Image (cartoon, rainbow, N blue to C red; front, side, top):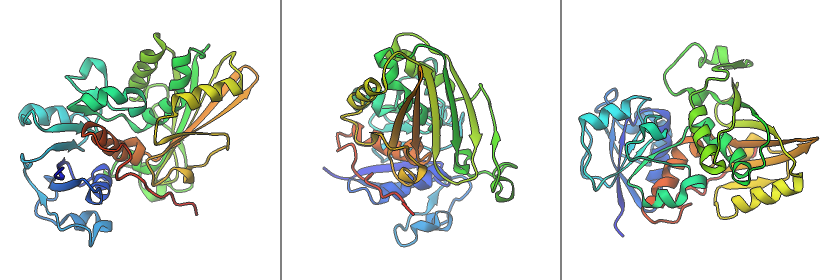
Length: 322
């Protein structure tokens, strides 16, 4: 099999930088086009400096059409506009990292790309809507319970994300002087990822569940930790059995009986889930790296599935333990 030719639209941002780090070293891919209006003519290594010595790519103004897969890494709302103005050949697979096509009402033929939920559909797809980072983290903590029908109350979730979750553009809450030694709540009960979480839970449970979500900005760079709890009659042992069965064939989502910490997943494509029963409430702690399993790593995982490659190819990454 010849190498998969990759194009990246919006190649100067955080998720695109992560994609290039993965795909340049992936044994079956060749990045042939890194498009960016803002960085045209610059070497990719001038922006993604950690790739010095790994690539000679230069940012281009236009997208090379001689590709096998296109990753869309622009901001929310821009992918749909781009595809309307630039028809992509049917032979090219499209993986979108924005929220433009995640919901069923907006899908336009895109398959929601959470492998733990839609693995078989992803394998047959030509267009993938990559899930949101908070959505991925929260869902891996809830989907087995939803499928088993053991959720017997509203769901209460909190989540803390690193500063890279806000993207590369500066804002008052992303400056080091504000973010360091600081935390704050944002978009309480209204976060944009709630709708995709709700659709996934309904897909498995056959009914809707209320998810009360309070997101926090964390004073660290990478990673998400989410805590979700709900009432259930299931015992802790029964819950562990359900979760382990649900994820037994998933290469990246792991159930543990050790209270986890972010260093177990940061810089990897892993998701880790821990369960604890207290009284009639089951607590699920889940965590991921927001730029990898929450974005670019999951996008490569989806690419592997689409092209019939080993799902974990190019994604066996080492966490930083200390």
